Length: 376
Image 1 (cartoon, rainbow, N blue to C red):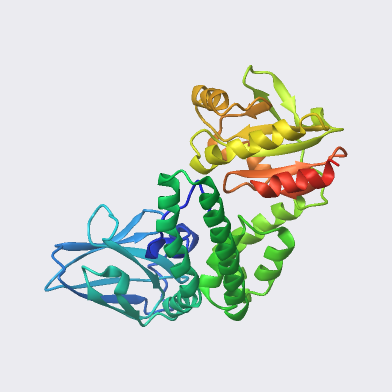
Image 2 (image 1 turned 90 degrees about the vertical axis):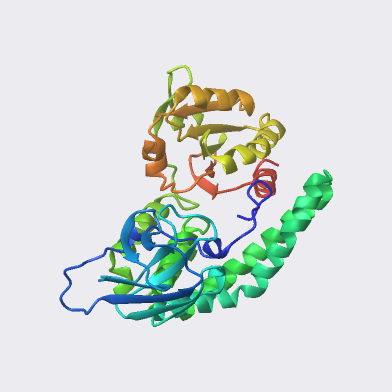
């Protein structure tokens, strides 16, 4: 979400969130394909080597540079997005993304202007660029808001900041609609598959299932497709109208607390962590909602994805989280988070007095609006 707490100027690598290439397995022994060849030619390239990496940071290959030219070869079982880095440790302005598939791929441009690098020979790359073009007007408007946002913050103009954030959210919603349209019209593209997974963090079950169901069977049966199907199965269990999944974890004193202890109340199960910047920025909104509605049969059960108990407790005190907080200190393997399919935080689920989920991922004004609706 393009919010006040996380508003940053976007570069090429931020326009399309990149899923780790661990999603797309690389098979060097696939005899059915000739594999891929990436031939690059960049002017003003003074590096001795260039590097090919998975988007999760895992190095794949390196290539010797000769007069600005370099070559990578390999085999891709499925198309995937990787990064070409001009330095061994990737640096801003020294990397650019490329979609790899089994074909002859050409990379040309200037090492001093990587955002303008031209990549040909990859159909998936063409799809990616078509998507980027489809939201180019939105990206330009978002970038234009960045300087205005900084200025408003420096001037401590809270009204202007709020207006800019509201406009940014509106633009993000428009971009999401364009993305859904792209997915629908490109059912055979690996870009669509990646973006369906990205939408898993912000879409409800019915919407995501519809997008996934419309994809080509080859994508749905790929390793990444199967992971999305598994996630959808969890999302179905935690969709609005479903019974909340029971769990028990210890609070800050070591006392066991169960979700069932709160039956009869409206309870917001709030997943967060002390190390999560967006979570900490959202906490004042959650505190505000709690203080406003705590006397109207509403409470919060915080579930932390922390590992360090001391930092968890420090954050609770600093952010003034006065409701019940629990954690098993297992990081992303927190058992409640796994059961609810939480793959990004902050995340939350609103549960009614009968133990039925009636809302999820409610933040800022959306949380207060929902609480005002049910707590009349």
